[in-house]
Length: 85
Image (tube, rainbow, N blue to C red):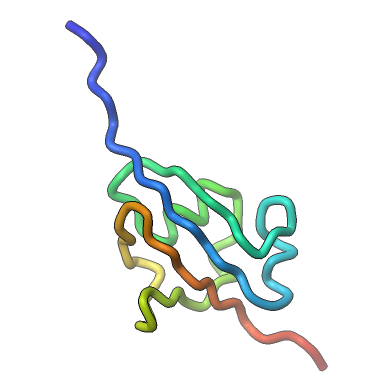
């Protein structure tokens, strides 16, 4: 028997503000391929970003928790805690 292909999806993360310094390559736009289904927390784990650095995600203008499962090809805005002093 041949190997069974695992479902994979591509998700684009848009990181605003200082939070991008904690994402791969310190980029504000990160395209990720992860096994489906994967929630926001799973995606963060896959790219090595500490979950506590993300407050929530925004999908199509709607605030989503980190347990949200984005669709293949979806773009998420990643919201990090404010910084400053």
